[in-house]
Length: 164
Ligand SMILES: C[S@@+](CC[C@H](N)C(=O)[O-])C[C@H]1O[C@@H](n2cnc3c(N)ncnc32)[C@H](O)[C@@H]1O
Image (cartoon, rainbow, N blue to C red; front, side, top):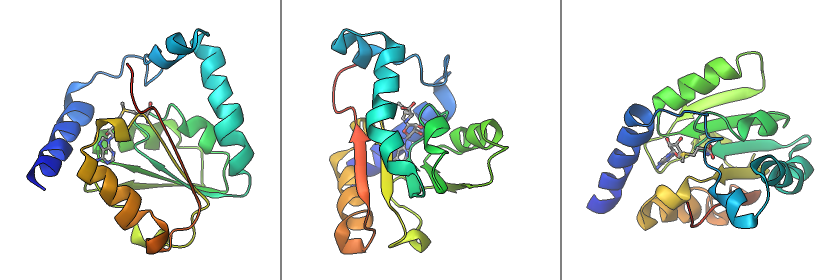
């Protein structure tokens, strides 16, 4: 588990302290380029196909919101809990979404989700986060904490497994 702990510490250092977030996540355009469409079309397509149809009246968890690139669409859910390793990212989102009353914020230790949501979640969303995690960390999230054995229920939606 040492490599997993190292990975969590490296991710905390990078995303909480070093990375400058020049466009709050919208700087990551590689997936749109790979699809040969504009970033705006690519992003709207993900929102239209993977977010909007599933969030009406739903209880949603977003793992690793960063600076809220997808949160601005997920916030239309009934209730949304933002879970991130980085306290600075959570603070950024607290400020960005301060007018929304259906949001909760939860700082994770790097592999855990809030236990009091067990059985209450309709959708778990995460984008461009698990690709940065050690396989043991991913397993902890998927199998031990968020899987059906833990009674979470709901649907996982996680994108971006490779590429820039
Ligand atoms: C590349 S950014 C993606 C942010 C956002 N999802 C987006 O698409 O704009 C990676 C995010 O993953 C978070 N992160 C990295 N490792 C994590 C872990 N083990 N648990 C929770 N969040 C983590 C970082 O703090 C950062 O917010």
